[in-house]
Length: 370
Ligand SMILES: NC(=O)c1ccc[n+]([C@@H]2O[C@H](COP(=O)([O-])OP(=O)(O)OC[C@H]3O[C@@H](n4cnc5c(N)ncnc54)[C@H](OP(=O)(O)O)[C@@H]3O)[C@@H](O)[C@H]2O)c1
Image (tube, rainbow, N blue to C red; front, side):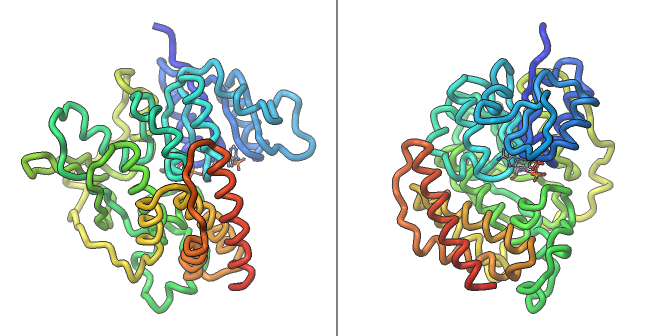
């Protein structure tokens, strides 16, 4: 059997760099292409180390070497000819790549949750075709727990670590510094998702993502500080099925890249005696006010979730740049959602238009709050 050719989009990011290591260690996977936004230095090192067929950058800046594919066709070039695409791009910019996989009929290992948050309607038939394999650890868990289950399940429960905001006293939370918020207790991830974990916007996105991936099944969230139980499914007889293990994104990345039956290797030697107490707590909505707003936007649908994502992207960027307080991220999202005219989504332009309107509005709110 010939090796599976994998395109790694967002190769310079947290998910992307881990995916490259997994592909490198596998005899059944080969690296078709790597793609980033602008980190040409790291892209150059990755090319030397892993020898992909194609290396591409969307916004490479000046002095970009000629072997890097750039320009409007670079994304298509990176994807075409691959057997599987790992979409590890951050933000709504990832939607175009997911839609291109749908158009070209290429199996998609999906880390970019914003694809389903902003453009779930556009990807619905692709998801139903069985060619979208989740990479987010919670959704990978649910996907695995549902394997072999022929009867309907009663519900899905996503676990949340609580992020770095979990242990910060209420009175210090509003003004917590970017350094403090970027120190995640369990996971080592990109900056945006780490901040989103602290606001629980990430978990709200995951609720939306779960609805698109797993259909009309009730989705709930519990805080599980240890991140050992990676989510749970409640079966028809009321019992629960879960996947346990130490937090390591390489596990769901490897699972998706090797799905359904390529060789996988054990990534951890730890077991139950290493895990300590498995604790579960209800979500504290006072600590995480943005969670309900974003879940509500997902329930209303249309362009509202895309607006929530755009507002969050602008707010997180402003927070990381020291322009607004941590506590203001939820205010920006709330104001944008309150003023957003939600329209139906039938083409990508609908999402892009909503994204632009929401970004404009979010920037104005940020300027006022600064
Ligand atoms: N990190 C995790 O553990 C984790 C877990 C579950 C899900 N996810 C999801 O996976 C996605 C990636 O997260 P991450 O933490 O890996 O992010 P990250 O570390 O910030 O990396 C983002 C990657 O996307 C690239 N990128 C950004 N804008 C782009 C654009 N317009 N076109 C092409 N590439 C672009 C970046 O390139 P440059 O380096 O050149 O900017 C970088 O390679 C997110 O949707 C996140 O929610 C991540």
